[in-house]
Image (cartoon, rainbow, N blue to C red; front, side, top):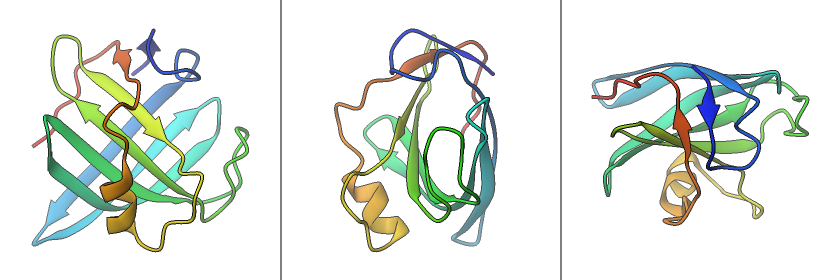
Length: 119
């Protein structure tokens, strides 16, 4: 899926996301291209005020400057259209849960060009 408007840096990206929750364990992957950013998803919060937030670490150094092991959170708002925001914390986060809890309420979202199914 692609993006239009909203969050800076997303309009030229496509995102592929596959995340599953099984018995409280979250796993999956989020890929952004052409940034060549792939996240190993390790946690999710579906109770975040109308959003689903997933978090994980970069699997390798990416074209956008995200280092391998860097924490990144992706916020998804279902709506018409769906919206996505990507957050790169400036401060160190100690855990995936801390990453989710620090996701900014005012993170700008880009409109998705396709439906995102959460739940």
